[in-house]
Length: 307
Image (tube, rainbow, N blue to C red; front, side):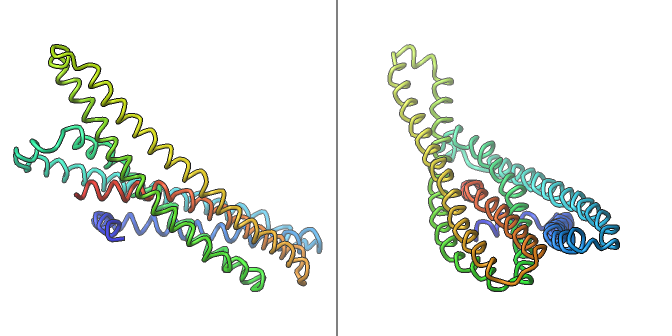
């Protein structure tokens, strides 16, 4: 959190655009809940009761919801992208200024490949952490809260089941977060090693050929390259396993809710609206689970750049 707070500190000069983007996210969350809510009058009043007034205004409401959604999506996505690229520009400028001020002794003990990896690879990871990840994190969290409010409105009993599995999900996400962060640090270090060995080989190619060091350099690069591949595969395996496990836990709650819903006195439209809200909630929960790897990469990259 301290790293992310420091990273968000660079957003302050652009707080107006940031607030507009947040407003877009709030608007998006409300349209998602409105879409789930509208299922109930469509079924109960439109199809069952055949209410002519509802049949008349319902299409207009649907168009209004999705028209508002277009505006909300643009405000949140473009606003956050504008802020993020501005922050990245500022951080690259600060990092370059710092490189200009550092003494010669610093460059004697740090390879240029590692420093270039910070400027190019690590800073670019921050772009994703500053825009896409924050957008998904805030927008989907707000959407989940709006959908939960709608679900509580229709049935408190069924919604309580969703809260029962929350601690299990929290423990699982916490474990996965720590592993992602550890692997991300290793990957960034290995990327610096790959850049360093490659740069040394290119710059010292004459010396390597004169002294017959091709085999030694090849072995060194192969070892580093293999380590880099292994760390990426560990990250991919963790990412591939964490999301399905979380979804499986949610699916158990989903099955239990379907069973208990048949025991309660809910209208067809109410049950359909509740199920729509829950399915949308699962979709946004999945998106939140999937951003964890990129979020941890961004935090690890921020630590590297700040250092």
